[in-house]
Length: 237
Image (cartoon, rainbow, N blue to C red; front, top):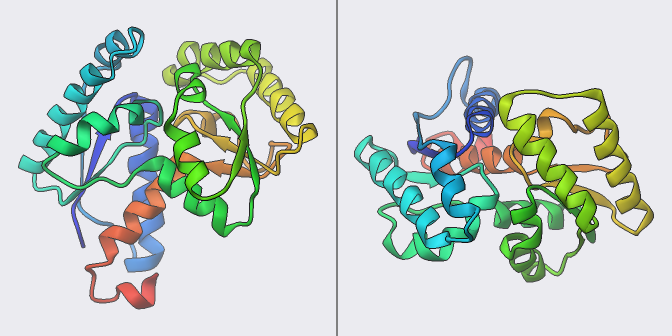
């Protein structure tokens, strides 16, 4: 199995990605089994210095530091569960020592395979206003709708003031359900949880729309890619 390198950004998101890879692999390769995984994270505070100033080259430098560390640890390929910092990918890929799976591309593939045509896009305000998902969804012919500016600001507060700290409140859940309900009323047939921490609050059981959990989609793609070199890969996948 290929060795998975996880480039972390927020603690909750990185931990969720690691855990999901382990859980998704076990049914495919045997009890307690999963690919070798190495996780490297630089402080979220360091990332926010650059994100807040729209400095994606600075973000890329941090991601490349993690990439080089993970290569030295033996990783064969990289994933990053943080949607927002994928905006730095154009600066990352030319200098990366290892290949990456792109979270938005994997989500777009999943949406296409499930027959979704119009997604409600939720996540940090940086992600929702940025090009990461529009570029990939357009490639696959999938429409998207953003929440209102006011809703984007409130969701951003929920993410950074609560979810990245491992906190969930009934009030925030109710607010997210209201936003997703409005997206449904405006023609969306699924909601894209474009923030690694949003699945801590919203899941298929409490969402007014079917859920595309970007972290889970990426983790499953990492398992598939890792197992593609496994002797039982064809039967497992």
